Image (cartoon, rainbow, N blue to C red):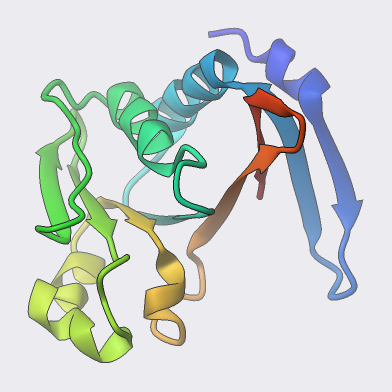
Length: 157
């Protein structure tokens, strides 16, 4: 897949801690295509966190990432189950929605340590509920609505 359309949309800036943040404003269709490309490029083990307000597109992006990674079954939000497991072409995929967790102390009930020790792709929505226990190498994505443009989402890495 040619991703030059995405490269033009991204802007980068240095943070006060020396890290580089990149952001883009994408239509929902472009976000979906970008998610598939991202999924196709992932190598397990990897932890990817997705934060943003309700309706920002976190689950939609997870669905696209899973398609790109080779998950063939429908991907749904695990809001009540907290975690769904899918068969990817190269490794398992775990999709966690931590919205209902009260804090990191609740993670033991979903097998947190086992999930992170497995050679898998782990996609975490609402990662703030696991603050302090996320792996230091977790990749961070933040999604938000673009004021005045309901068809756009801003994604920041």
